[in-house]
Image (cartoon, rainbow, N blue to C red; front, side):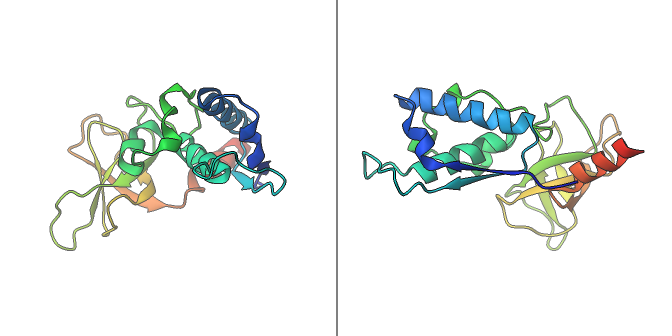
Length: 182
């Protein structure tokens, strides 16, 4: 399985006439990339384009919004602080990636963020995964670290918590492609 990347010039955000349309435009672009299973969006600085404002950096704007859209909804409040680049985030359409799971979708792999919840010394970390119960991993990670988890007890209908291990971000996609080949 190959890696698909697209390059987009930052001057693209100069086309929409308002910040609302700009946000919507970027969400549609991100959605198209998601539909075609693009693995990486590279934002290129267009040196021929000059921003009309010193306060607006088109590259940073695009990167921040693409990162926001790529993050599952249940993790956004943990990973993103208020920023003027995200003022229209509520108007952007969801991109519906495979890793954007709903609260009733309990699968083997799930995205999470380490939370600042007390644990016994040396006994691991708690991870928010967007379900009623959180997950626990066996090693200590700093709060606000985003992780991809494999839940070992995901089929348990009412666990006290999910037992999990951190895996590579590409692991779910890799295993899905192997299963699809068989």
